[in-house]
Structures are given as structure tokens and as C-alpha cells.
Image 1 (spheres, rainbow, N blue to C red):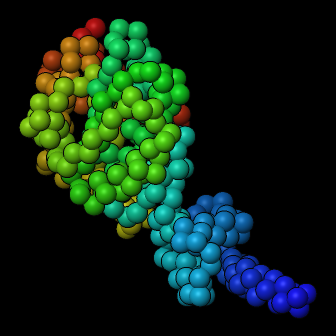
Image 2 (cartoon, rainbow, N blue to C red):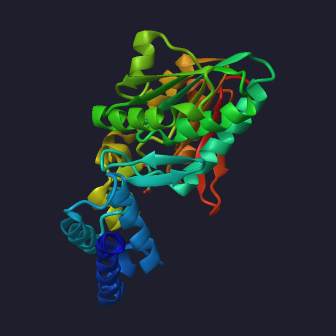
Amino acid sequence: MMTTQNQMMATTSRPRDIIQDFAKSFFHAHKSDLEKFYPGISLETLLREFDYLCSLNGQLGEDYHARMESFFKSLLLGIPLAYLSQKRFFYNVDLFVSPDVLIPRQETELLVEMALEKIALKVKQQESLTIADIGTGSGAILLATLKEASLRYPKLAIASFASDISSRALEITKKNFFHNQYTLSPQIVTSFLLGDRLRPFQDKKIFCDLILSNPPYIMNPDDLSGVHSQVKLFEPELALFLKSDEYWEWYRQLIKDAFALLNPTGTFLMEGHEKHLHTLQQISLEIGFAYASIQNDLTGRERFLILQKSN
Ligand code: GLN
């Protein structure tokens, strides 16, 4: 009996030791290359990410050695860690991510804060809300907002809509909502809409109190020099870039449709490019928004546009 137990312990702990040793020598051999792609990366982080990747599919399988080699090889290509471990924590929620969706960024958490501030004002006037997230990707913005709103206003009825032009991205959105469904109040209903910008809302005549969006905002090619090579190589083009000759028309349409689909006291909160927000502010006022202001992110960069249909 004792022998069997000892044998079992020896066999189950071995792969972990092998991984530890492999990771350690890999880390030391490639430290400077790794630093280029993953500033501040530690051996512990690598081991944690690899461990998480394996635990997604249960215990370490027979193929752990192949997985280990491919994981560490991928690091040398600079594939973002979130795509390797397939997860990212954002604001208050663990998200599944794949190369079909943008990796949620820290600065976007401020958009969630802003959304919650607007919701706090709106619940004083309204018993129910309609909230949309345009170009939802992983669903980060909407899910984080709804999760926090569920805690603050458990009785508030919210009709929420997550839309994306990419059906593959929308599969990830649905997966994240499915996995987090019990963290949302039962008063919240979410629908998933496939389509460009606010097109599906026009077709279905869905009017909103709050529209949220982190649309593609890097002008191609004008802004490309400021974009990290890892972003260019591995993140979805559709979520990031707009051609310079289509840029302003693309946004004019988005802002015009948002204006038309907002209820009279509605708000549009959008993340945007620091170089272009002033022009978008001007366009929004031309379209008819009563109030258009720019909000900085925590690094002091102009990052968000706040639009109110009425004062
Ligand atoms: N913040 C992203 C970046 O610069 C861009 C996000 C976007 O285009 N919506 O990498």
C-alpha cells in the first residue's frame, strides 16, 4: 500500500518538476529577448500562465511536454501572454480571450468607471435602462459594467446589447457572458447582435440610454509608428485600425447613428485616439450633441469622448 502511494506521488509530481526546470533554464537563456516583449516578466509569471493554460483543460495531460515546448517557443515570437494563457482580468471580471478579440486594456477600465457614474445619475430618473456596447470584442466593457451595476442596483432592470462586426469575436463575447452569467442580476437581459457599428440597432429599432464603445481608432497608416509591433502582429486588425481616407466618414456615421438611437437624455461614452478626439468632439457638436467633452486617461492622455444628447 505504502509503495503504491509513494509511486503515485512520484509520478504526479514529476511533470511539474520537469516544467519548473525547463522554465528556469529557458527564462535565464532568453531573459533579454523576453524583456523586449514582456517588460518586467518574471519566471513566476511564466509558470503561472503556463499552469493556467493547462488547468483550462484539466490536469496536465500526456501531451504536457509538447504543450510546454510550444508555450515557451511562442514566447520568443512575442505572442501576447493573454493569447497564450487565453485569459485576461479586466476591472472585476476574468475574461477568455483569443486572437479574434482585442486584449482588454487597463485604460479602458476608466470607461467602465465613467459608465457607472452615468448609470448612478440615470437610476435617479429611470427604473430601467437600455445599455449597448458597440464593437464589444471580449465583452469586457459591458460585462464589467453590468457586473458592478448588479451589485450596486440589484433591482434595476437593464436591457443590454453587445454588438460586433465579427462573428468570431461575438462567439467569444457569448462565451464570456455565459461563464459570468451568475454574477449578473436576474434583472439583466443581454442580447448579442452581429453587425457594423449601430446597424443592427437601426434595423431592430433599439433605442438606448447609454452607448459604450471602444471602436478601432488607430489611423492607418498615419498612426502606425506609435503602435507596438506585438499589437500589429497579433491583435485583430478589425478591432484596431481604420484607413486614413475612411476615418472621418466612419466616425461621422457612428456618431450620427448614436445620436439618432439615443433616448433624449442619452449618453455616448467612447474611447478614442488622443490625436483625434478634438476633431471627433467637433463632429459630435455639428451632428447635434448638446454636450461633448474629452476626458484624460490616468497617464494624462486624452482618451475618452463623453457625449450627451441634451444638457
Ligand atoms: N489602445 C489600443 C492600442 O493603442 C487601441 C484600441 C483601439 O483601437 N480601440 O493598442
